[in-house]
Length: 263
Ligand SMILES: NC(=O)C1=CN([C@@H]2O[C@H](COP(=O)(O)OP(=O)(O)OC[C@H]3O[C@@H](n4cnc5c(N)ncnc54)[C@H](OP(=O)(O)O)[C@@H]3O)[C@@H](O)[C@H]2O)C=CC1
Ligand SMILES: O=C([O-])CC(=O)C(=O)O
Image 1 (cartoon, helix red, strand yellow):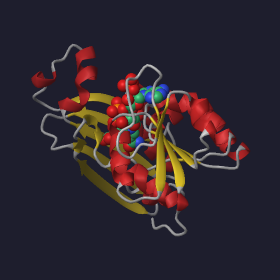
Image 2 (image 1 turned 60 degrees about the horizontal axis):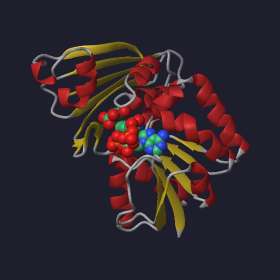
Image 3 (image 1 turned 90 degrees about the vertical axis):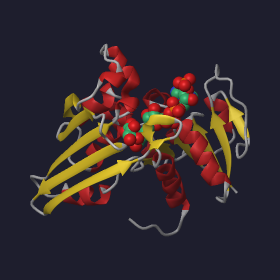
């Protein structure tokens, strides 16, 4: 049986554990904050509150489902010890120095920094299209006000008072992912797959009419064009995070260990 460690004990972790406990051949440990009142439930073998204890457990893969700060805090140490590290809070990698340091740590540890598609898709096409000079990539996030409650409150806006689409941001992927660490990680993922943080244009719209978390990716380039809109349902427990994200992490974990993968 392989050992999987998950950093963060929130919404994504809970859903990953549910899916993995149904059949995958993994024993699971989680890392909580030392202050968090969290005890092991079904599917979770061990709860750690200290990264050194988790590393001493010798996991075969570590998946981060906590937040961007957790990537800066833990990823390098894990990678240097030779443990593959799957990042959900990809926006942390908008910091080019961190990104380079983690790639180096992965090389030093003879392992890999793994980046899932998360809430979006089509990254295979984006990656191929970006090999042609002149390819342009844009991304639009359109989520309902329920996904933006603290951010709207910080602007003095009551979410129920947003009755028309409101543009929250227009700019480049690195700024979007840094400014909105719980909603725009996918902007960084798209940028890493495609034309880079400073060339990926991003718009963020709070849309009271959005039927879910909408993600539109457009590519225009010498090899062709592509437009993809994904209409995700929000997670039942966290409207910022699309429901599919936990499944994307599970797919990435299975893919890492399987002898054959598609896509
Ligand atoms: N790539 C993608 O497509 C997507 C990525 N994400 C990323 O996934 C993250 C998690 O999402 P979700 O599970 O829905 O969020 P939740 O808020 O439900 O869960 C996050 C959990 O991680 C804990 N946590 C935060 N920092 C640390 C830390 N340093 N050490 C240990 N635990 C920590 C939080 O504790 P506390 O509450 O005390 O802070 C919380 O329990 C998001 O913050 C976002 O960065 C989300 C959606 C899409
Ligand atoms: O889950 C989503 O829809 C996207 C998201 O929150 C993120 O990229 O951080």
